[in-house]
Amino acid sequence: MRHKILNHTSFMVVLTVLLTFVAASLVMYNKFNTYMKQGVRDETEYVRIGVEEFGEGYLTEKVGDATASRITLTDGEGNVLFDSSADADTLSNHSDRPEFIQAVREGYGEKVRFSETLSKQTFYYAVKLENGDVLRVAKTTDSVFLTLMSSFTLLGLLMIVILLLEFVLGQRQTEKLIQPINDLDLEHPLDNICYEELRPLLKRVDQQNRQIAQQVKELKAAESARREFTANVSHELKTPLMSISGYAELMMNGMVKQEDISDFSGRIYHEANRLTNLVADIIQLSRMDENSVDMPFEAVDIYELAEDVVNNLKSHAEKKKVFLTLSGESVVVQGVRQILYEMIYNIADNAVRYTEAGGMVKVSVGKRGGKSFYRVEDTGIGIPKAEQNRIFERFYRVDKSHSRQTGGTGLGLSIVKHGVQLHKARIFVDSEPGKGTRMEIWF
Image 1 (cartoon, rainbow, N blue to C red):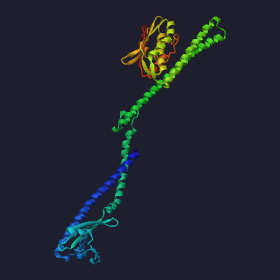
Image 2: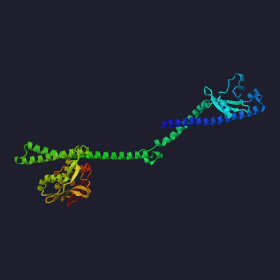
Image 3: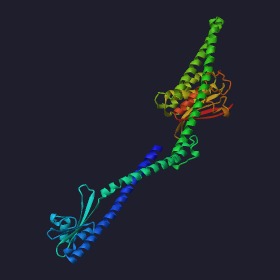
Image 4: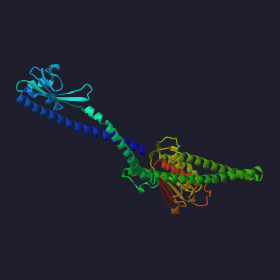
């Protein structure tokens, strides 16, 4: 930044000095040129008066030596009668000169001619006398080109001095400009805005700081959740595996009576089935966490899925003597069929599991206010208000004891939560201990 500032400043200084020098030189030269031409005209007028008053004898060497201008007198045909700078007999006829032609025609004429090197310019002014002769006065000066070139040495010295001053002052000023930027507290960028022009940038930095802090917080929370999930998975997997291993070891060592083998085999089957369900739920959650669900969205009839769920749970509900019903109408939403089924199933399955014998579970599907809903109401054990926000955590159970008497994996409502997020839906819970629970998903 410092180099850019110095380079740009130096460029502007050089450009400014050059333009100022050229402009000033042109203005001064133009004024000088104007005064010079006017002086030649006035001088011509003085000589004309003398010649017409005293005749050609007025023009002598003394008159020529009295001025730096060149005085020439020609007759009406252009023949040179007198020249203050050369012998008149050696000069050629002037009838072809532009100023002579103009003077003969108009009474006066003037012309500027440059030397071959363009370093000199000569201003010619001619007037026609009363007797028909033509008087011409010429003055030679430096051209504007030579005037500018002759000043370049002074300009170069001046430029060097100015650049040195600019370098020293620029360095000091640049340091003063940059120092507040170097002293910025990027952790709290909006606390001290040194330059108003930096406000948009510092706002972006502050916004990024907040985003980074939020991401760090989320990463820590995710890491904590991962560790907790890993511990819970290990615990949940270890228990059925130990049960299966224990029952199998007893049977292998012949410590089970023949009439009890069927019961032990059933226990092993039950634990293996629970383990299979647990692994399947873990895999499904992992896929949903990684957004790796590759099943496409399609039109899905929620009522049709609810019918399948109720039919699959009816046998289990009858064994528990729980009255399970379905009501509503056909409702089509866009979603992933498999995940929608698991969401609907898990809510209804939880309702049946946690409803005592003689209770009721009512499943409803419909529309209201242009939105589709799926609702499950039960007369089960209910959920305390303080725990209603935690029931969607993995392996969280309301009974605090992590009892497995219900046979659940503890991951059902976590799958529901992820499915709701995937389908951009909303889930509502209304429950009271001892009076039952109502869960609704709105699409």
